Image (cartoon, rainbow, N blue to C red):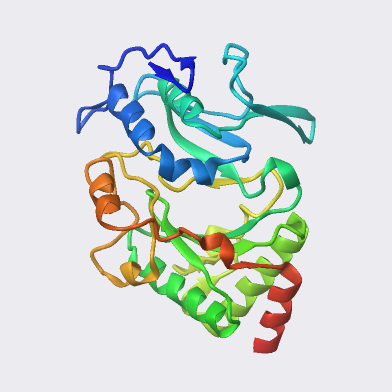
Length: 297
């Protein structure tokens, strides 16, 4: 396959990646090829952690941060510091790279919350809401409580299904503060919500102390941490997809974290524009967010 002047040797397209549905490696490659205009804006300039399943999701997969030495030299990478050295991360800014990585068995793309231009300054804050059980209703309730609190602060938030069990509530940031400042604000927001809605939220990190409440998870908001990229497939039966929603959609009780998948995502996007289009116009500074939160207390 030739894309943007790069020859990509596509292989084993008939290999079954999702056994129950008989979705093949070729289906995964075609999905990412066809969806490049939607997913690339969310991947652009972000260091990636790849979740690869070269033999399908029923076989052992692995997470990959370090770019393989056999990746072609036209694949963009960025060397970044970690505690005990450096990691040469893949950067996926074009369709050719996206298709190449899909051909390597990449099912899910996990991206940093900052870009390589300002690697120590996150440009989004992610609140990860996962249910303590299989009941999605507590996730729905919690997401709207967060949205309502942020609206009292005159802050616009965004939501996406993770394609697994929960949702991410996202605040776009102006990229002028560091991860410690972002996490501190998220921590304070979580404590406020846990006080105001103690029947729903908890900040207890130990599962045995949560008593069935939803953990207000801010752990992704740290240097080097990642969040699933919107429009990524997940290595779960039925091939669910992490999907941006508008808030009205989340009110629909038929919607859950796995509502959109390989069979219906294209139909959805043929009828509905990406709900996050233009989201960057609603970006905030951490100091401003902190001041707004203090006024609620």
